[in-house]
Length: 228
Image (cartoon, rainbow, N blue to C red; front, side, top):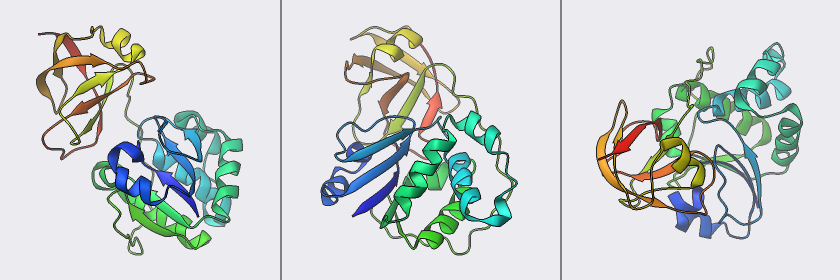
């Protein structure tokens, strides 16, 4: 089985689902690498740029979308045209798409993402499920103009409900100016909490993991941090 995986970190989000497909080959589109996922081709994209990458794929298989500005979409998403060709080759004999549930519910361009997933899955005859394992149907989704990407420059957290930890790697520690074991106040549009920062040498990039009680907004967020 071959799976096009559009989740931030499937083995962390839903280890049971990842285990179910442990014999599958994955191609993952994500801003951060899931190192526990086996047999995985990783295509890194900018945070929240999934709609742009999906549009690049769709423009290669749908004549109505041939006039899309691929250079702009590629530059904004940091996914090159050669990588799009690699994804399309993978999709030709793929079986399934796994799409992030949070992205489908809270991404600012969720309607276009659903419409593009419908177009791509229909073209390649693929089933689509979300990261919770539920089967999806986007036949009623309508494609509109893509929304401008938000900026995620600076210290970024990936919010989740799997645990209560605040942990990040070396790059996040430098950008956020925090220390291992330090009590930190984390502020953003949707956050104002205090947690102890845990340094994890295995985490790469400027994205930290932040456990929260409830998650009713987009999982990625730029934050300001200072010692509590």
